[in-house]
Length: 139
Image (cartoon, rainbow, N blue to C red):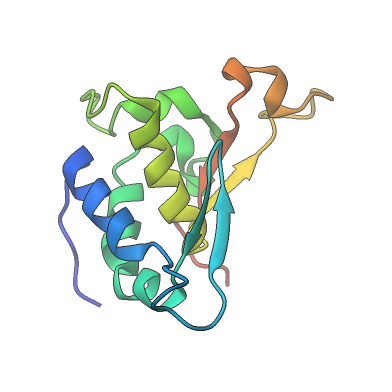
């Protein structure tokens, strides 16, 4: 497996999302349906074609999102900053796009709050969920 070096970039995320959308007029089979706030139907084959890049983009998020860190899950809005502290986007839609793609390849997971607080994520963070990035493969 080659290493893909990427930087979180709104324009690239838009391109990836457009490439991975399922078009019922031209695509056959079943889409992968994912949802954060908005729902999207994604094409399994095209997601797989872009898996390595999507994974690399997810790995650019701060440590609090990484399953291996033990610090997560991370709040949706915290994903506006990359692991270097750079504010890479000013819109929730770009953060959502990253997580939709991550959900589509099974590398991101929507979660409740960290710890067992007896509350759902919809009660916090402006009603937006928390996320965990599966950065290690299960043994």
